[in-house]
Length: 523
Image (cartoon, rainbow, N blue to C red; front, top):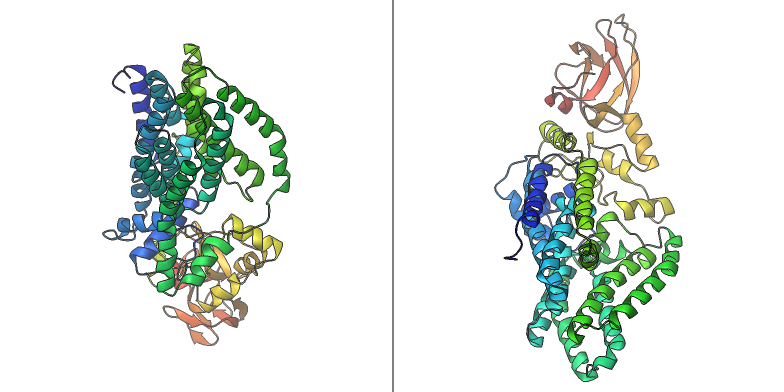
């Protein structure tokens, strides 16, 4: 990279500077607090899968747990977590440079690094705190090692370790393994006329890589089994993630993609470059294209972050064509920066909402009080319901393969705070009936009609047991509930109650007393 001067370095610096700024402004994806909640659990003695539901492998969360060792319940830890992703972003860009350098020349390698650093979906997706950031670095690392000039034994050792680490981060690495295996086989077949690889040697290398790759995931499974948590581990990582096609029509993507991949692969295989370079280019193309084909056509549920491993290799393969016309590179960089700015809207502080919500929850609740959220957005509080409401859970609830029992959990655990109303229908009806909006969350309570203050009683129903107070726009209301004067807070069981106000009161509210710890809301 010594010859990379001027504009490329400036663009790389721009990418990192914009990234640093957007860490504190870009909206939080729901996956970010979900991962952070699991890491919080590890740091506070909870075991992933057994005590906290998760459907990812545990390596990323274990590595993140130290973030909580010296921190209080501070919402700004979300920013720290994002900043911890910066080294992974830098590692990804470095690996892109190494891959492009092994396939093309130094100029292409440098501009590939720049274009990947500015690629909008890659830039914004990897800015977020998520396991996929480490996962894609493992993927790029495997590719970089396999096409490097290292001795074969060293290649196999490093590739196996990186592939094993990828499986330790996410079982979606099955996509990696299938794409790499298919790319290796097809590369050997399509370039056999340039000199075939002995079958025995290939089998030995595959066995070595697979054997090394299995060590970490098998070790993880054994560790949970020894801890008595095999069943929840197996459910979270395997059973829960088994789901039929979300949109079966996606299989039709195979029809246009296959001929395009075939034509391009044959063109690369027949090119006149050095045999080693041809094999490397063909292998990288087939790994990239194979991953995309498997993801869009055959993977049951394709999320946006699942495409992160595709973008870097695709950009590397496109860059030589862009460099044939320098104006094309200029346009691509300008368009990429413009797209990032338009999508991220840095002039708006869209990260503030998540920070405020966490601050509100932490202020209202004690460390041992549960909070109902969708995926762990509260971060620092346990959840009353085991399953998180992520895409697969929601799909299974819609299909009827899971029962919605969240409302029962809210009552059983006396959960007084609900963070989001994007809930399954049965739970949503319960929350609408027994909770009221309070700031950016919902707290246990019920609105009453105007109280006349003449001794007449108003009846109301409580759904969640706990301490309640009566308030209005003017503050606390002197009232009697079930014949007992409410002085500070009164413990109410679920069921029907009667209230008599001592004076005329507009917009009265019977509300969980803990809500008053967050004073920035009025009924």
